[in-house]
Length: 294
Ligand code: BEZ
Ligand code: FE
Image 1 (cartoon, rainbow, N blue to C red):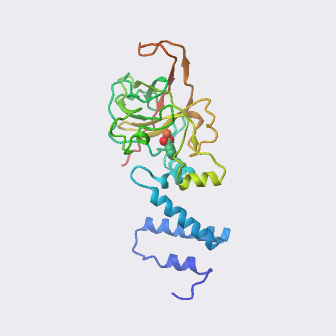
Image 2: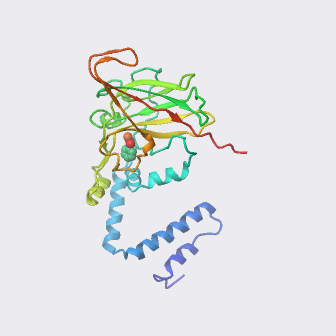
Image 3: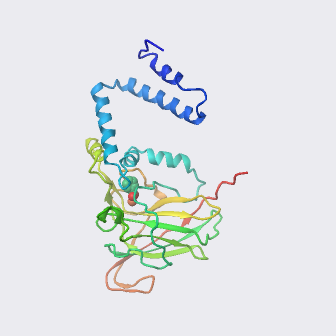
């Protein structure tokens, strides 16, 4: 293989793969090389631009560790995460739609009884969350495992606050609970607020250069696991948020937006006498039956 030029380089790279390599890997790399080469030809990439791209990716690598994942932020802000998610989670109408997972889920969050206060000291206005988990035919799903996590009133997740970033000292505004026999769940937490995704690294600079903001509209994260159903990873968004139509990671679905109702001081849904105003939010989830493999 000699004297390769701009017309023959693509074919030369494709031909260099061993016939015995994994067939899916071959499909992926073939398409990737073809698209990358077409992209470079299409925009006539200069050497300076190519070097800048290498520097950008190098910086993304340097800032990435087990607490900060700049490549996921890059994928999120370029719409790749939503695209991969949408392609892999096509659901029948009436099932609750899925959205991005995000980087702030933590394994080992505390388990709570229904009705508990999962804020665990996180700052924010009180909010009482309730809902029901159902199958497509309306059957309540009991014993579904519900993981929930959210940011506090300043827009930070607990993991962003703890000094070592692990959040292990106090799991705040996150927890695991199980739906009751009637498929229902309820817990107390705090009001979700809009927040910016981490933007002090190369992805933040990219957003700025593109004239984009880093904000996500207020939301609660849910991951719901139940035998016989596809795992649902989604958010519930707060209606009225000013970022609903410009989410930095393209995760908003109209069907996931609901009212957070503000109440004057009085008796909360769990019977607590609230001296301050509080919020309630109710959202029902409809799970997709799991694929049955013969
Ligand atoms: C989140 O909602 O937690 C999130 C999603 C994508 C990027 C950053 C944060
Ligand atoms: Fe979030």
